[in-house]
Length: 204
Image (cartoon, one colour):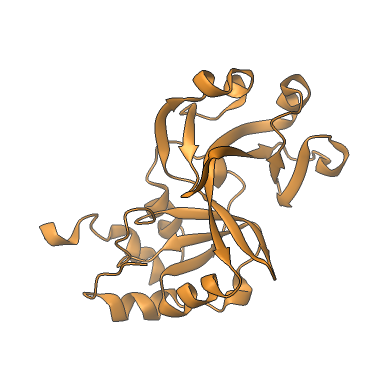
């Protein structure tokens, strides 16, 4: 990961977390001094985390492509904005879908849904939208994903590239809000102060 040296020590102190805190359903929030364009001010939702590595999707990178243009069957169930999201740099030609199910839904009994954590599930896009529709608050479809091999994410956490935080079930279907700032703002002090960090430091 490319990094800005200015403010680096502070960010590393504030964002260092043990890798064991990472699990399916947690968020990786990019540190304030992470400048790589692919991940700057991103919020990554971890879908898988095991001995083979980690997989997640970037929650706050909508594309200019309307979901109805690529997956019209699912467009009506998508949360606003109904766009295809850019989940990460790996396999951009593949789609991955997260659904936030309604409270009380027995995910394990629904064909086409696989629980990630709590009310968030992976959705098989070959399943029937008419069956899934009444069970979900909304879905989000991602092109590509972010992936880490075994030990790679641990190294990035050790450098302080990411802040590991708990997710809300509605985070995967959040709209055009500044999700990066919103997630930080709901944390206790002093972490919540990072939400006020300027988007482009060089302009200040």
